Image 1 (cartoon, helix red, strand yellow):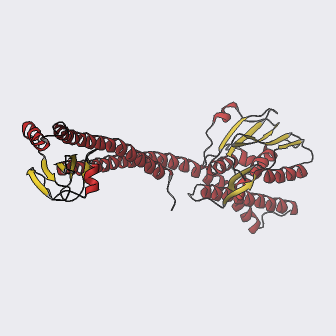
Image 2: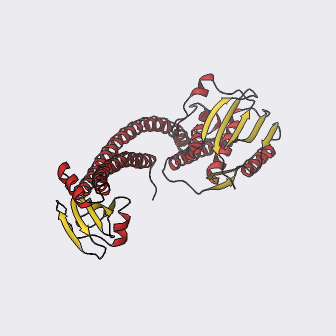
Image 3: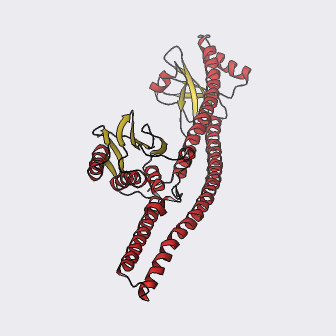
Length: 407
């Protein structure tokens, strides 16, 4: 299952918020629990110390410490034979001492006994191998601990819910804004596209009507009419194909993304360009074995559009440089020419996927006027960066940055 970028951001944000809340809240709950247990252990150690300091009357000393301090502690006497006598009762539902190894261990440190009536206890070894058992209930501590954990879970749920709702409304607002902007661009583009389609349709309709009514008598006029109709049909076909490609690039899916050798693809197109344009001085400076993750079809279309733009908008003998290098984890592709370039304002223009870059060019050379838009959309689809700048040759430089992957 694939998630949108906003969904991924929301999930990561909620997870991080959950980790922070649980981490901070959990530390607070555990610290509070530890402080309460330490308090219980201090009372057990106090009574045990009183018994230990009075070896002749350890039971009396322990009982005196309990009564004088008002401690809620159970006191019992356990013989080495396993007989136990309850000396002082408390709120603890005392069910008897545990096994002797546990009792012996409790003579050194307080020991926790779990169960339906949990408690912590200390033992004091007296003369003859008998033990004094000093126990205190921890049922209230365990109940408070569970209650605190439940409160932490509820608080975390509320925080996560609020965060999810805020992110939902935030991204919905962002999406609405983007949709509004996209709709405005679409309406603008549809107006331009309808105008571009209407012009060749008018020409075709006019010539077809003249030919059908036999209004063109001369063969030269008929030939010119057929040529014009053919050119206009080709122009419409190009425009429709570019529109379909832009629509495809705007979809959420991606076409056959794979590891491709960008150097090999660029070398092939560059060699073809040199062969088909013998009058141009074409320089190829392509580093080898540069691999990226992309669609081979998309990348080929990008290179083809860039080179086609040069052919359409520059003189036949204008020099061209094609270079491919790496900078760290990024591949930089530059296709530049020595033509007239673009107006200064064009280099700062935002090239959007449905923005016709130059509304006059399609009429001059038969293109759709969407070349730059298509190239920008292709690179954006592949997660790269597309920009225009003044070429070192004096014309236009198309610069692309794409992440490199290891073989």
